[in-house]
Image 1 (cartoon, helix red, strand yellow):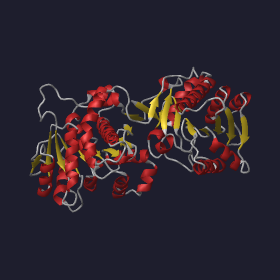
Image 2 (spheres, helix red, strand yellow):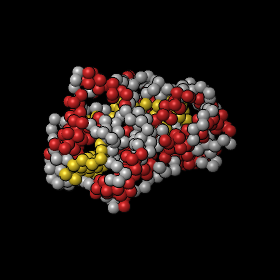
Image 3 (cartoon, helix red, strand yellow):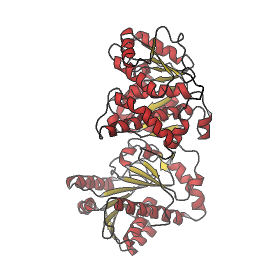
Image 4 (cartoon, one colour):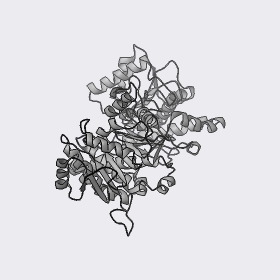
Length: 533
């Protein structure tokens, strides 16, 4: 499991070592790990180390010190190193080590900016070490102008040099992932001790590239993580497996209230997702014409009539493909909310939410739907503000509604009212296709029906009882993302349909069940290699 922490938590974990006078040791470990990562990346690209050009963008704080010490290590490997000091000062010991190793130093001024930006654009490696975890407000004017000029120069000249962020891309908030001003897009972020929340949430994740977590000796001082990401090992422990004497009712029955005359396919796709994710039975309630289509497409589904109370299930899925004019379906959705059973509430059910919800209700909005929900609750958030601060938005939504909230996106975030939060990024951009969210709702609904009553597997992973609903939703998002990736790979990396996602779920489930190491994803935890280079 990938665990992430706020900048405050990381700085607090450093304090016992700083108080013991071991601050220089921590910086050397971080710098050596950063330099080692650069060497590894260059070798992976087939770039000759001796004579390779490295430009370090160094701020005046400890982040700049990490970058300068790393530059000194690289200079001793025979690389041509240049430091661009973006502030009015630099870390004294780091700067001394850098110059002693033969590195060239330039102070950034308005006059020197164009030439230095052009040099950095041509470099084999740019190390972004301007701002660290405690920074707020983004890059200052001159540094922001430099990053803007560097990005333009790289684009104009088709530069393919490597950009490595030191701890996090400068301008990304370590706690929230929100960005301020210009941010240099990294290929790799080498982050120390533990991942930062802002690296695993959009828009910060847009700039982080691949995240490499390197231990530096503060890990034993971390508190409970602020954010988690399930990997294959945890997924395998949480996936439900039928007992030897299981039968369809003990396997979990999911009730589906979805689809409409306008969007009948949403019901089909939700049912297909639920069937693919192992529900023992799927029971559909909806308009007769939609029920006929469900029967034709999914003969395994039992199409029923009547009210929510008259149909025995373990969990409900409501809302996919429903509109405000679908009064009978909306009434069923409202009844599902008050049934006491776990519920996945998608799309059209969100306007029908009661005032008070509980953690076993999982809302699955995209950014626009979440903004609309906030506005109905008296907020002023719009889609742009949600997308600009996804982590804050999903946590606020869980706190405001009392429900578990899954915010769909390139990085899918899930928050419980208790504060338990998950981030999953297992998919492919091809998942952005009509009906994909309906399949996801079906997958999550099937998991709730099968495993919602279990608590021990979650407790063993340190997840509280109310947080297990968020973990199940994250599990569904991870499984859905892996299935989408598998479907695209089967199409030679090309586009996919929602139906092909559903088709790929059983095989993805099976592969996860057999895996103990992480599969798709963009976060790597390395061995503690700061003592070697």
